[in-house]
Image (tube, rainbow, N blue to C red; front, side, top):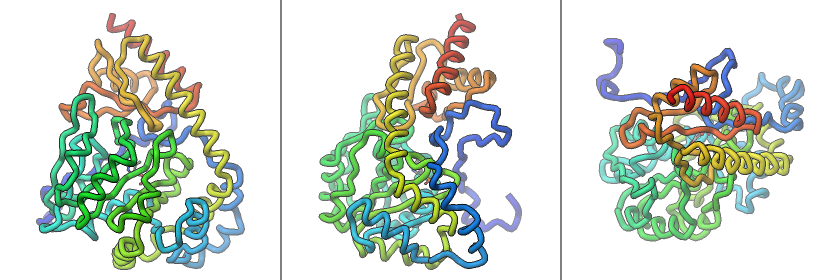
Length: 355
Ligand SMILES: *Cc1c(COP(=O)(O)O)cnc(C)c1O
């Protein structure tokens, strides 16, 4: 820390993203990216023609892409907000809706960025413990008079709750905003999007980073009432009017036009998830039921940190946290069948080595 940093950030602990080694020598199962490249049409969409317009600012209202999303998801233009990754959506949520009088709550085991934003804005926040088996009990969120963020399916557990459960939290906190972070919804979960019509205090947020193979493009989108979308717009136009760049918008529109490619990829991921889970079961692992493109698993004989380091030494990256409540566990992204076979082979070697 320099002597110039504002004192209000002295205690801020920044988010630590998963490792992104730039030499590409690892089987990379640590940041929930898609193992599949973008559809061929995406490469065409960001070709010389669009790149040739990079001297011009992009449309700050992102109309073409928002229109595509509106048609695809059956909502109106004024229900959609776009951001530079769903991380930026989260930033705007904490910035816009939370303060000393409007504290925020989220699960104690969830996406590590939530407490970082709460600290960044010096917000009072509550981390609500999960129940047995990392289960989220929605009654812990009903009528709590707080803004709420719930990742559904949750990360890093992969567990999901039903739309009717989420609805209870939205219905019983009418004076607060509930944000459902659906980063992993397209791997078998059920979206809360249909509730947006009914509840003016609900934001449903999704990303192009996982299901749509566009993590490098940085694009997140939120569905909500025109009032909430207007508030997010206010934050955006007070931070960076051009938060979504030209190439990313063109790429994203092409993914919507080639939806079947991504649906097929998701089916493969779900098959590989079942395959990997079954193989780990045979090796004596305990794996939580997942509706995401990753699994949360623990080995009875090797603790999470040891397994993470041993896998890394063998060229396979997974994600591990030292946080005591989850230190036994590793989060493993579901990749291609070939990647999962390498992962499983390395796990078997490690189990043999530790005897
Ligand atoms: C990956 C992830 C995000 C961030 O997505 P980006 O759009 O890449 O910023 C948000 N929330 C959760 C729960 C995630 O796992």
